[in-house]
Length: 282
Length: 274
Ligand SMILES: Nc1ncnc2c1ncn2[C@@H]1O[C@H](COP(=O)(O)OP(=O)(O)OP(=O)(O)O)[C@@H](O)[C@H]1O
Ligand SMILES: [Mg+2]
Image (cartoon, rainbow over all chains, first blue to last red):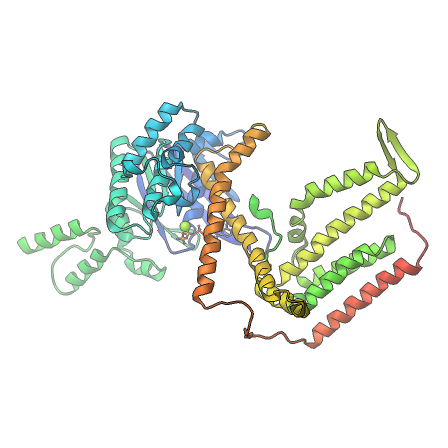
């Protein structure tokens, strides 16, 4: 499994006063089993970019290859692609519609043509995975709290067992515990099933903690693409485009400036702690 | 996809038409619509075409954008056209096959009806394209103000209308988002027979209604928390004042309507295209 973008461009409402080039000449490749983070300022084109991954919007120019096949070719099986690449939208709770949570989560698997029992089995598994309490399975999805709705909606996509999971700010508006739970589960899934995960987030801490690779978007263009340490080393440039490095990176820089002999590339609290302790022992 | 529907949208541009007083635009649009119905001659429609063309040109809204607004009424247009074409019995017969017959009169009426409908939509969408919902409400309220005397809640009606107008693009955007989310979950909206398709709409309609009610609720709350209590004693930050260009626009419009009226009245000869 791999997703490959070649010189992808996307323009909203071309030919009108609302014309807006949301993506400019994006080329990148994501291979099987990667955990990729996408960051960028508000309106930088992250959501637009990820909607290309399962063919929901068609590039104005450029090509997208899934497993080496051009998805814009005549007769390409889009439904198959969509069940392979699971996309969880920003604010996914707005897609809930069934009378109870369990049936709603079953919607995806049902569309894949699975039997009722298999649908329910997968739905329960997915709900369990996102930490959705079992006592609410029969509840109307409209009577849940925001965070519970979010979990139900994410489960709705997980139940389809996609090979690639794309999450658009899955944790916006959740409490810290809920946020960690969901991301830890996603990471667990990624490790145990070798699922490819693409995570859009505004939290540098979450990104630094979970992903192996960061893609930075700026005004519709790809600005950086690399391992977290490499990308966050450019923290000055990131600040110029309205982003930042994780807080600990700043602390490490400040410590170094005050004479402590530490390396400055730590991006998570654990790493930073280890590095500081090491510097004391030396 | 669904974003192509442009009725009720505002198209930002800097033009004379955009700057006109909303009252002028409302009244002139009304007069234009009336003018479409008091004429039945090529000359009259020629005048309407020139007038509409001029306004569109001056408004700087691309023609393609306005034409896109016609898409949703294509069905209605087709039905109207077919019915008038086949069901008009008067006049001389042109074609006859099986139970259908087309007469010259029927053909004429059909062409005029189609033009009327299309101009009707184009004329009124020019108004909404060039007027922000806010000033549209102001205009409606001010134009209908005399009805206050007979206890019509003009301010409330105007407010309701402008909210409804404003909500059209928002709901379309929302529909687009929900459709995408359900398609991403494997929903199939395109294939199947009519019943299957209607069923496939449920996952889109339910969240749409829920969100519409939620939005309405939020809006009501937001209005109340800013002490909105209807029109009584409410003053305006920017009261509407006529400027020279507004009087000019009225004049041009009146001249146009009079022209159309006299063409319909006195130019008795009938130029028939076919
Ligand atoms: N449906 C649309 N029609 C027109 N323009 C759009 C549409 N959706 C997004 N845009 C524009 O495209 C650009 C990129 O939007 P996008 O939603 O991809 O940003 P984003 O990076 O996801 O931002 P955020 O962090 O706020 O979610 C923005 O400038 C936005 O105004
Ligand atoms: Mg976004």
